[in-house]
Amino acid sequence: MSTESLRQDHALIEKVLKAMWATIPLLQSGKTIPEPIISQVIDFTKNFTDLCHHGKEEGSLFPELEKKGMPKESGPIAIMLMEHALTRKLAARMEESAKTYVSTGNSVQLVTDMQEYINHLVQHIWKENNRLFEMAEMALRNDVERVNKELSNVESEKLKEIGKTREAYEKLAEDLAKQFPMPEDKS
Image (tube, rainbow, N blue to C red; front, side, top):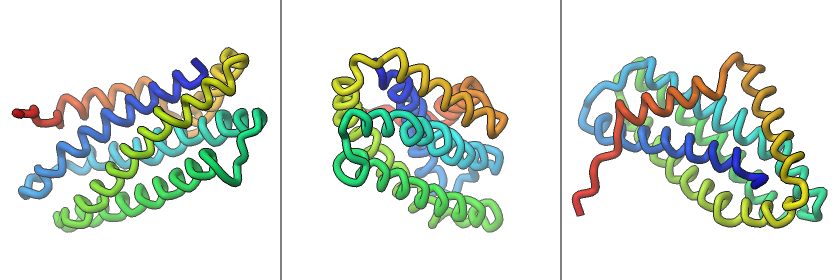
């Protein structure tokens, strides 16, 4: 599948989103989330979710879909680009409120910004996994190997730019999931 690496990114991003969601009641109850954890989450949102993952979509997948006749100015690509811009805006707001939280201990705005970011990204990921990627699989079915190689190259370049590895982000996601597990559903 030409979107497999993007789907794997989504699984990793969702793991971090779940850990973020699990921290919200802790913040609301006055518990302190240590600054290094907050910083790592912000780094993940900026560098893995945006720079790496969105970079793969914007630098490889979307141009490939354009070559197959999907317009950039309207339709699914245009919507995804608008949503990527909104993701960046929400992440920047969350970064600012995280700084305020670290310096003052006031988590009210951070909780609000985290909720908005998480809700937006959950919906965005669903649209990509269940709509855009399905269209991409059909459109790129004869170019799977080449598209996969391009996506891999973009990921390598983006991570190299920031001196990070996918493995480090995978470990972070695992560590966060263990430290901040989602509460069990008792229904």
